[in-house]
Amino acid sequence: MCIDCQPIVIDAYPTLRSAHFVPNTDRPGILDGLHNNLNQLTARDWSGKLPLHGAVDAPATILLVQGVTNAPPYWNGTNWLAGASLTSGSNNVDIVSVLGTESNRTDLTLFMPPAKPQPFQYDLNGNLLNDGYRAYTWDGENRLVSIETTPAAIVTGLKPRRSEYLYDAQWRRIQRTDLSGWNGSAF
Image 1 (cartoon, helix red, strand yellow):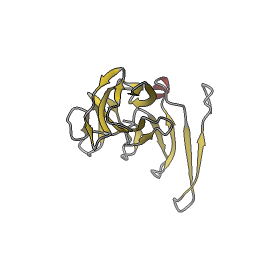
Image 2 (cartoon, one colour):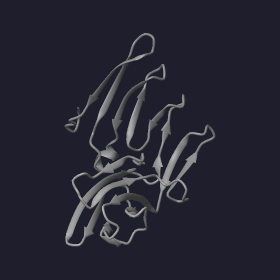
Image 3 (tube, helix red, strand yellow):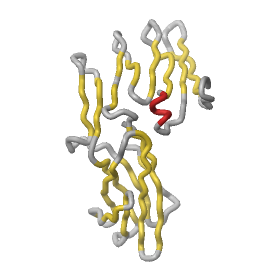
């Protein structure tokens, strides 16, 4: 899942100061994983609403998340909590704050796994080969050689990217090359 508790700070909007998306691990059903006998994550499923929280300048602010009027619970005066319904692939979450006649809007673009449940594949050495977003390539010494966006993730809106790695004789990573600009057959 593309939820790493990364803050989205909105500086340009005077009434909506910030919005964050956070993983919610204390509520069952939001994120569930299946593991194999080697304790490797083999599939991850998600459901429900993604918790969002943020801050506004004044407690009288009306907040709309995905077009739904929220009277979110405020705590400490101006902090709010709401939820957004998500589907596989690219999700655009509109957040609008209204205070009196002033209205401000921001859009969060969140990527959920292209497949539900999100599959994970490993090689016989235990190296992750595919996580639904990226394909990983390893050499015979179990060193990561490349990471590339999968076609399924590209279809959902992720940008095609590829990173390649080189190592010296002492197995130290000495170079990383990031490629973009996919033309349909090559970078």
